[in-house]
Length: 152
Image (tube, rainbow, N blue to C red; front, side):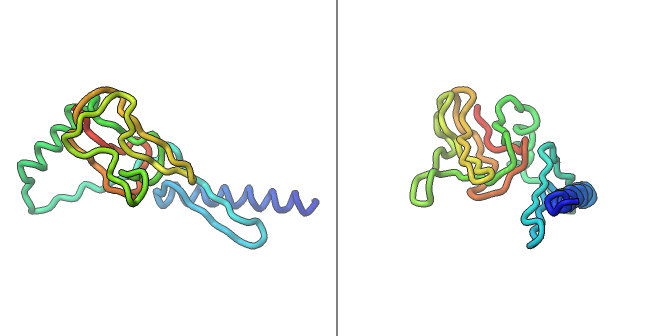
């Protein structure tokens, strides 16, 4: 075996081990780095986090119930993340946010940015409407299909 074949086999083995760890630990991505094979990163694009159903003694407020009903009943009004990444609500740290609650938006207008793999991706309104709720915070990590914004 040549040196390149050995390294290719080690990379293949590392990917298999990382893939198994992703499943076992329910992670969206995992990465290793060493001097011999360099950096190897594995990610699941169809990752859906498993959230334990934890009951508490606290009662839901009226706002919590209203927001939950709004989110559940009006799925067509929800803008969801098309990718795994980090949300930015403004074009740069010194700028105003793209939108705020109550703003009227037009189809095609930038609502926020999702940064993925060092690429800034504009997330745009798919219809005209009014911003009812912003469900994420600036610099918050998001997964594919996470709810970002409600437009009415």
